[in-house]
Length: 358
Picture 1 (cartoon, one colour):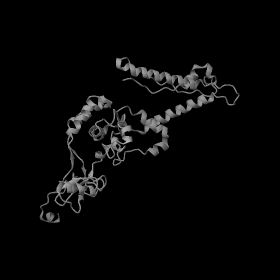
Picture 2: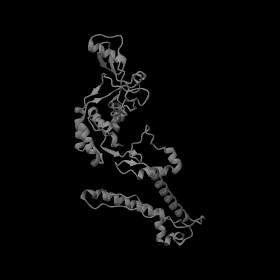
Picture 3: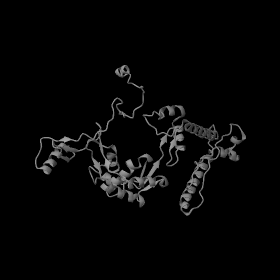
Picture 4: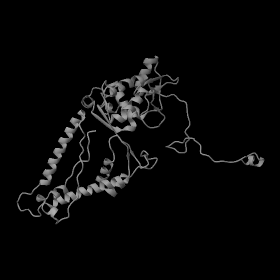
């Protein structure tokens, strides 16, 4: 640069950001393309039975109106699966090579020597194992089976008892990476679906709609939230803001809702406790609030069952609206004689959140 300056050949200097990639694990290392031999799994033959299982209803997706089309798109446009990963940790690919590049696949070095001798007619002194590791999802797609040794010890008592299971609950971002591949593996290795129903939850995101990520630093500290709001308030705040299949934009204000709701429950409990006699006189203690709640719970349960049964015949949906949890001040007429006041009963009314059959 100095020489160009001296000769007057330099027009200008300008700094700009390159698109050169760096390793996430080692920020000083430049990531460069490298042509190398990779292991692939041919997917077209595996994908068709897994697609048919969902289309025919053997495996049901919930909510299907949102995620069934995504599943079908992935399976109808499936590509061969590269399972090689250039990492130093993980499950090393069980392929063994000689000096000329000939290979066999075996679980151990001794077994590889035996297979090599059977395949090529000679027994080498040693073989070199492939340095690549298996893709994490290649291990995960065997989870419903291998967690009970269904691949390494087929037909054992546990796999026969537990496989297949009933329901898988997971995130919608791994429909193909995990869910579809588990269905493929189950049908391929056991000739049976691994589960009957898949329920997709929403993703927890920050206020800007970004996925929670360590690299972005936008994940809330749950221990800090629990210290500030309480464990029950945090649970309630997350639960109330996450309808089926929809993403949750997490904000601390949702924990405030949980805190206020828990406070209302606590006040209702204190009101009921005030109706208990201070001294044990031997007379029976009225437990009408407990009995009322039990009866109302049974009533709601029956109504929900009837709603579910009637939804197929297109009957109007039923909604349950929470009633007031406002408490009366001690010593007032509303709280002093619960048996004679309808208001005092309403003060401890606790009903489920709105439910519909849709």
